[in-house]
Length: 595
Image 1: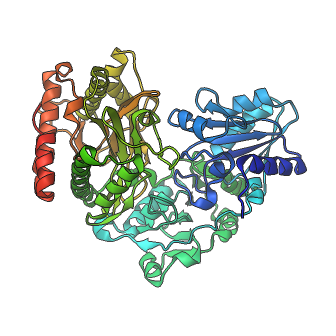
Image 2: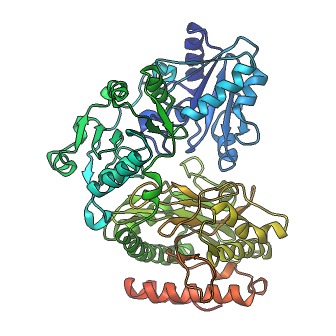
Image 3: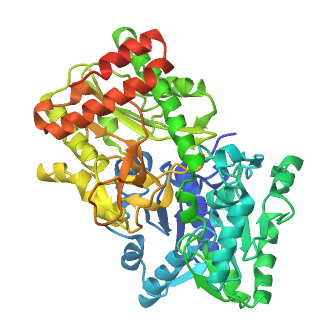
């Protein structure tokens, strides 16, 4: 059966809008959990627009439509969404609320699905649009779901116990700790809607979304440590039920609403994170007269601060990941001399090398395999119609990661395929200088990622250059490759704390030519500085993979920077040489040689 085209899908949605007297509909990329990774059944934005990025929102009017994305996706959105149907706008430079005020008359009605928007975001949008005389309407059914006739069924992958050897702390201990904190703050319970928080809290993992081992669910954690879990019954085996224990009761997701209503009987406020909780939940609590205490997800910070078992697991997983990367780079070096692969072929071969490693569970995100101008698209995803064959003279950007039972990895390397130009070397070395500056940083306890961000950008700024993405994001422990609250970005406010894992990934992108990014994961740890007058922190680099020496303009490096590169490569070789074969060891010896 022929599938409807994007123009036909848009027309069907507009017909339904007319029936419901709606002048606009919001179509975000997300699901009821507001996470980065969503199941096929929730890929509404991709179905409606053709844009497949991990973040964005479409606004559909009667005769116009706009797609709003951040700086990672402006090029991709323009390529994927039909320009005859969708205007592409920068989400930060021109927020969709401001665009709606300019595009709609007073009295217009804007429909939204309250499950797909955070409570705080909807409240802000309501305030903005109401002031302009525009009504914003919560819809009881998502209109896209109504017109999407072949929509996939929701996922039902098994939820499985996550072993204590990997988790490091029992679920009982986690629930008691967070429950006690809730009680001390005067809250009777908290509503958890983010699957990674629930997976961490209950020491379970799943497979409901691509690339992240998450069982989609909701939960209410009481101050006494009891959890009401709302999850599809088909996901729970007898072993998982036994693992959860008597203090966790499981019910189908459709019983969440009634459970929220009953929270009024507690007589205490319910802790809710308005930035990450669907508006539907807030609306239901409000309608039931349940008092709400706004605050961050109480699992977020303790999840981000890895315990010793998780730290050791990450170190070991990066050793295995490094061995896989060395195997891949050795293969690629030989392939370029005989039969160069395409972008997709290269990413598939890398997945094979990772799959051979112990405890490997799959990728942590869709590999970004971008040759030449494709590398300039920050979150490029190779598809059959764009698949480029690697060739001498190109720059090749490879951003990839693995999920292992003991950790999550994320690494980017940029390679010169053949002899690079002097411009390529200059830009690469500027990025490397920023990467080194951040990796070497020592900073007082309490320092935020926002305070460190400029260290990575300064060499590029000196040359009048910059990049339009964050410098670092938090990484989970066999969970999501992106986690908070830690981030290294211009407005990153959360203090970095020992045990947090964050990426160090400055870059440079020359549109239509090439992209450069160098990414290592680093662990925040205490720094032993003799004579220090206050507690100091530093980074331990976890990622183990050679940096392309052929792209380094050594004359641009200071003695300290050159020493950093040499010491890093010496450590990479010493750690990985005995984990790879003879051919791989020979390649590694050359790749990790001193500058």
